[in-house]
Length: 226
Image 1 (tube, one colour):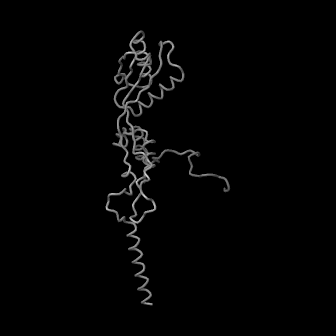
Image 2 (cartoon, rainbow, N blue to C red; image 1 turned 90 degrees about the vertical axis):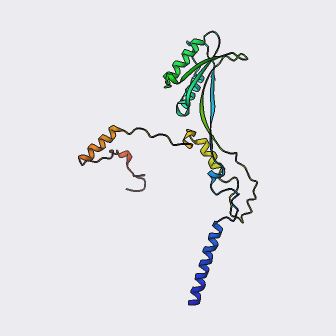
Image 3 (cartoon, rainbow, N blue to C red; image 1 turned 90 degrees about the horizontal axis):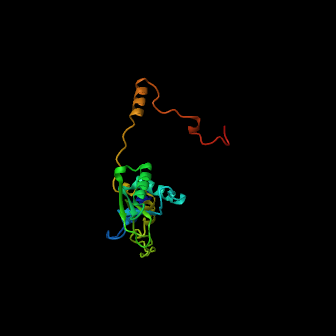
């Protein structure tokens, strides 16, 4: 029995050593890392975003489709814009009226007046559209599809060059504000009203959590049970 136990213990030790050796690559550290973020880092850079809209007179305003585009553009600016938003109007008759119209529309959409810049530009090639623009940020990473390595050669237990690329691409495409990848946002101010309510209830020995309705119960379903 002693010999058998010794053999079993030796076999277990050998298996552990073999497993640990497989888990550690034999590469010299120059190949792709096992971290997708390190292989395909996301870069954040500023970019100029613009929208050109046809405009004639203030009484006519914008067409419905152009109004929707305008609203979406301003909404994106309020979410992730940096600095001011500019209004560039073609020189000529109605310049002052166009500036006043778009300035008023931006103000009504929630843009502070001190962040609205106006200027004029010469008409080129008959293009009389009004241009809105601002500086935003874009997140991007390297293009995927690097299959230069032989995926069947796994002796060094290293990752492929394309490892993690799709995940990084998805993160860069889905992030609402790319600046969040650079530094965290400042915390919002605390809710003083809610804090006072909870503190008052605590001092009186009352329940401090919000009251739940029947729709907020943890029960999943009544089907098939009582």
